[in-house]
Image (tube, rainbow, N blue to C red; front, side, top):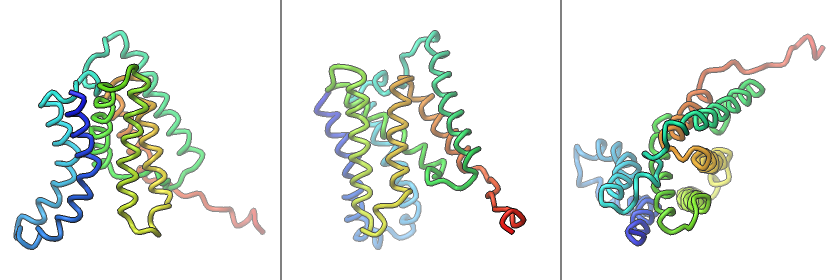
Length: 210
């Protein structure tokens, strides 16, 4: 239902704010459970809430890209994902350095389900697939904005935060091409692996400078 999808979307976007205010008051009472709960909280936020939205029927799995594309569409979808990986490989070939896009593999696994839920929620409101993808991206940008505004002012305008916004954009564009959550997430994960592979940093040749 559209209004139920609004509720789950708002829960995903604003629950980190609530958690940040409530957690300092709770952690002293949790004892030995404090560290396990702290480690599980990001996964519960990113996986449990979208799963509950899907389980309750608030969003539709097809709109999230969990199923639907026929076997005949997989060829074009695979080509789109391959182009994304090829582009990432070219970037790394021309710039063999640590780029701000780099982030942990687990963070990717947490991001994509949240963004898929935003797109599925938007599909209940939008009149077309491109519009639903655009609204889903807007919700993901709102989530990132809420996250960034919780940081110190000196830490907000960084390359890492800019890279987070680029990941939202790339995920939305890739899903717009594939309409497939699994290939979108797999492509994003593969890009993370590429960007986090150890690479030698190019150094200038001292003889050339003499």
